[in-house]
Image (cartoon, rainbow, N blue to C red; front, side, top):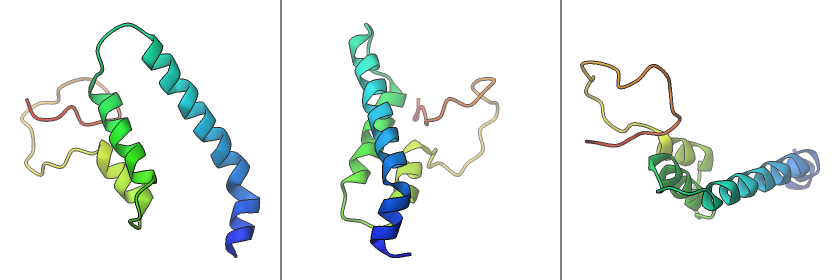
Length: 88
């Protein structure tokens, strides 16, 4: 597809997702309490969207991913939280 065809097909969906993301961030910022690792990861991932680098989807995913390679002895919780907590 041409760039124009990609835009014609996907722009409105991407626009909607961006507005949803902005609304989510507004809700989080209005709520009391400290920032946490998930919002920090989200903010780092958002920076990738404006970078000049390639593979933006990969780079965004890496901002949420655990970069370590050594296995941990036990899981820290029962479910996924969507971002790496970081080293303790």
